[in-house]
Amino acid sequence: MQSSSLYSEDLAPVPASKRTWHTWNYAALWISMSLCIPTYMLASSLIEGGMNWWQSILTIFLGNVVVLIPMILNGHAGAKYGIPFPVFARASFGTSGANIPAMLRAIVACGWFGIQTWIGGFAIYQMLRLWIPALETLPQIFPTSFGLQTGPAITFVLFWLLNMYMVYLGVESIKKLLVFKAFFLPLAALALLFWAISAGHGLGPILQQPSKFASTASFFHFFFPALTGMVGFWATLSLNIPDFTRYAVNQNAQIKGQIIGLPPSMTIFSFIGVVVTSATTIIYGTTIWDPLVLAGKFESKLLVSVAMIAVAISTLATNIAANIISPANDFANLAPSKINFRTGGYITGVIGICIFPWKLIADPSGYIFTWLVGYSSLLGPVGGIMIADYYFIRKQTLEVNDLYSSKGIYSFKNGFNNAAIIALILGILPNVPGFFTTIKVFSETAFPAWLNGLYSYAWFIGFAVSGLVYYLLMKKK
Image (tube, rainbow, N blue to C red; front, side, top):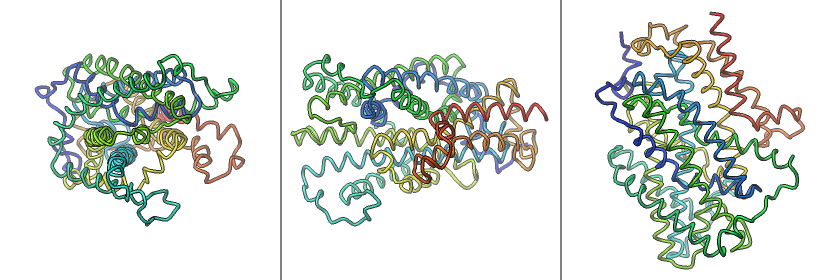
């Protein structure tokens, strides 16, 4: 029997007649989501961090191959049963406990929403300041500790309001923008690549830029947290991929589509980021890892304006598609009868401002070590628990009706599976000292060096510890 607190049309299983996504739909989805400014910044931040071109590309490729595994494994339940992520999580965490991983994933999506909104707003600022120079010299209205100038703050708020208006209009309103993005962003990326090759006097000098690491030890000190960051980049989607695979015509469609779409598109677009960032070192004598800052250096007002408007539009499309739909489902899972897509979108928007996105991407270390690695330490354990449950405890068999019943087998004790809660906490704990050290809550000497070092492998450690603990606890029941 379905419980009204657990069921809504948005969370219901997709009937077989409406599962129409084929292999190339999933490939196109990943190509579209990979072609975004944060992907470019992902690659360029590795160059800024000291890697050469092939080290950066290899790190990104390996990270995406690793994250592809839980992506396909978690996607299986969506394709088999037509259920979204918050409902799938009920099998392991309980009908009420599923709100815990859903909220962890939703808060991270809110963070990505804030980052993308900041990027779009800053693109508008880069354009307007050319035509209205006074924007650069507006009186400072925020405390210095905010790290936020008045001009960019105004355009950030304006772009945020535009995002909220799109939420008000609904998902259908974004379709044309996604089509625009699919055509424009690849062309813009190629144009930037050709500019870099031309201005940098060919690919030779660009690809000859050396690694900045003095020793193998210093390289690996950067490589492992960077690899964790690459995995963390799509750690959110590796959990909520059932939100998309629930529409698959069969398992092959989601498996092949993701293999074709994810690692290749991320690696190719990242290569452009690597080449352009390496070229800036030759052209300007300094490494410029932010493409918006780079575009602001171009002399043509018209060129910069067209580029920044296009970035803003494509960012708007990505934001609604990638960072609103999933958290809206997660928030709806809290109270299906009270929270709909629009309300969930507004909640996402407010939290997205509160995380200070301009600080997260102010420098490469904040982007990789604080943001990407930090949230991977929360999401890795969730992935480990869900995969251990579905493959080793449930043997890929779920009682769908019970997922929507407060009195079914997934209600456990008062709706919570204590084994999952304990496993989640134990998977997060090893990474806490390293996280606090990274954000400078404690000094590096506050914890043993080996304990701080675990944070470099945050996603992997959380995934393994939580998955193993969960399996052992459930086997004892």
